[in-house]
Length: 84
Image 1 (cartoon, rainbow, N blue to C red):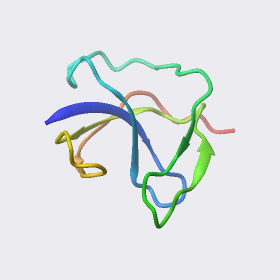
Image 2: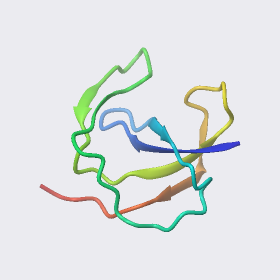
Image 3: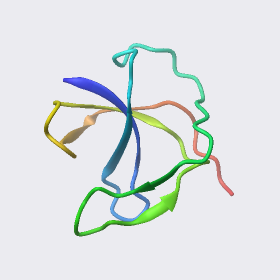
Image 4: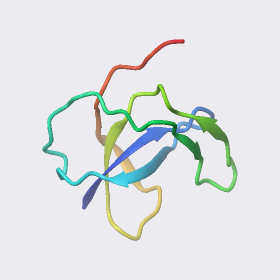
């Protein structure tokens, strides 16, 4: 299993993974700034595209080669959500 950085889709709440977590889940929990972060949900039935720039980035664990198969127990938040 590998660790990835991601956010949850604003529409269907499925994880959208966008980067490999090189700390393998053991890194410090500090706020990350990814700059402008516009992502599209990978689910064909959703496909929602949104700006996730101010959203909390989480860590997700999944097996390589199995898209969108993450467990809720394998998620850890990295920063608090910013309300606008």
